[in-house]
Image 1: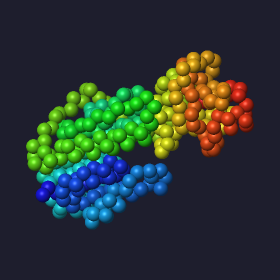
Image 2 (image 1 turned 180 degrees about the vertical axis):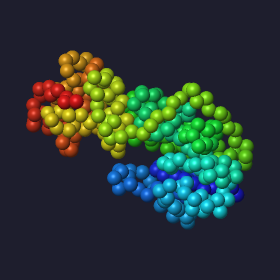
Image 3 (image 1 turned 90 degrees about the horizontal axis):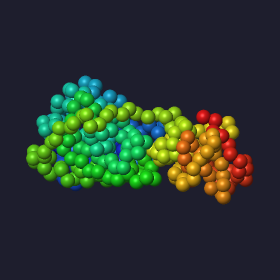
Image 4 (image 1 turned 90 degrees about the vertical axis):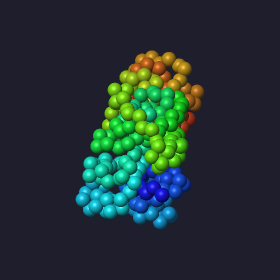
Length: 305
């Protein structure tokens, strides 16, 4: 029986740990994160799953400190598996597993290496993404690929929609390759890093809308940061508006970017094109087009940013 130490968090961590257990892998330790009280926790708990199966868990701030390295080295694992764990593993840790350390990344590597790959893929209007299992090195997401599974990104999918698909893709990719991997027969393919790029993390303020962009570009931003993410933000009448859902409308826009209601439907004109605003909040309160019109009328209100 092969043994493993698993570094995991989030839904991908939950489902991929479930795959290892289903295949009889002896998981000696799970390294996970404490939930951040400032973060919306909409995903499954890896720690609870490990506890259910009697697997010890630790939640170090930094897994690379000497005491954690020593604790893991004493376990003499055959493999590491990292599933949406948020800290980089350094050389002393990576040198421990006898048969290598593998990471599940939420893109079709070598594209979208780095942080929040699902959100970036939507912002950049990709039509597909997926999950990639690859060997870990000290550089993020650049090791040899063991398995991949693609999923489509539909025109109105949100990041949450796509993340759910990527979770299934990760489960499928791992489940398919795991028997060969445990038997030492899995084929690894070197990445051509020139075919992709590295992307950094995103902050809430990155969701501020640039109304000079096209309707499609803004629509992609809205769906990439829609709840449970912080949402796309703008200012109307000096008030904060959070735009939660849009559709690219057939109408052609003209004049300055503005928000308005017509025939009980909310719209926003952009640098080019028009968006139908399906869901939005004003000053923290969600309302529909009819409620907005009753309060403010149907004239056009130019965006303040």
